[in-house]
Length: 559
Image 1 (cartoon, one colour):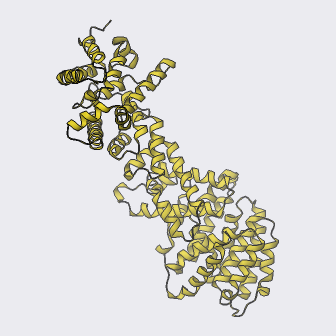
Image 2 (cartoon, rainbow, N blue to C red):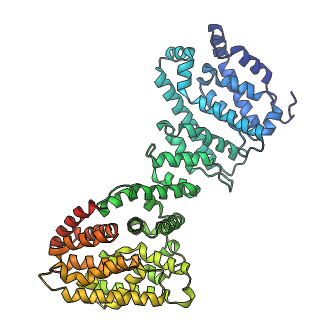
Image 3 (cartoon, rainbow, N blue to C red):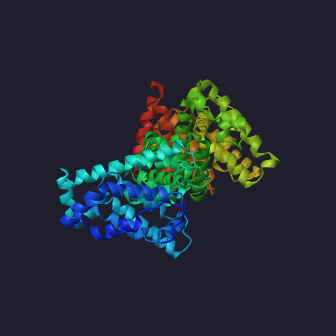
């Protein structure tokens, strides 16, 4: 065997002969001989690991052509892998044979062989079903099989975690550092064992581990498997570990965001509290405290909106997510808090500051003025000749849409407060019809103004019938553009909720509109959002809350 003179002299042939002689230690004589040599064998394995740990897989094979045969035989000897740290050392030696970037079919096949052996070392089912001698050995130690393998796995995990953490702290010491390829190999052998509870400390250590390499050192298969298990609630991980996973592997963050959308859209939710509970449970709002994660999630939300043509359910998810993010951001320690510009770097900062103010932070008497300022800023940006592209308009619209709470309040203020209607109607027209050119938007505002004026003439009437609202209802049903239809429906629904006579005909009128038009989901989501605000208000709104609950019960059967 040609051996580099810089590699320490190892009694390799002796131990290979012993491994062949022992086989799987099926006879009493071979078992005794194994036991007599275990401490010496462990010392040899340690020396072997020290000799090859800084060599690449190709060089290792060149120096020790029969290393695969030796390690393969020892891995199937239950007495060897059950002794002290021999199993751990075998695993580290195997990791040295793993190619993180295989260049040919031979290396791919070698990687597959290494993975199978690593999986075998922590797979009790194979041993228990095929190795009667193993059971006898375990019994002689005073353990049940379950106890033995439980302790074996725990010891392995503790040992691996310790070495990784020590390497993390001593990362600048090149001689002692663990190579990226071996860390990569460890992550791969974890894949089939992801859901094993005892493996949790190792998963956490790996996900928080950062070596000296600028490239990702953990295998994508490992990162995807951990994310998948977390999303399916097969494993539980600390928040910091989940955030680290999403920061280092963007496909996992994308999958988590899409999983959240699918989850919320696939179940019937009857309150914003339910929506918030599902979103918060995903950990995405908490993770969004990191600006990079927040911006990536928003990009995924934008794609979802374009693919669904701005469906109200997706908008509701985005708006609740944004509210939860703001709550977490406001509660963060000022020392560790990022400025708002880090989350909205390309947007008009005065507008951002207006939008992020939550309604409950301001006296209700200031709401109308606040809404007008928002409308004026948005209008100035939209009508700016430098922001005439559809992309620019979409970015402005998306920012406003994220803070939809102010849009709902704007629509309420039209009916409940002495407010200048034109700026509010323009803001709502932009929200519902963002693709319109300025001239089209002006026409939308004119049409909305006609509906608004008609509704305000009837606002104080205590005795209303559906016929009194015929003109407004006809406008809703006669509108060709879906966005105009949703805009007018929003005004009409608010009139029914907040006018003295609207309560009496609310159910009949809303049922009539949603029966003929395709706005059931939009009205349902509007009622959910309104109910959320009013459930936290005073006694004066209890009548409206009761009506909202009745309407929601009726509409839930239709959506």
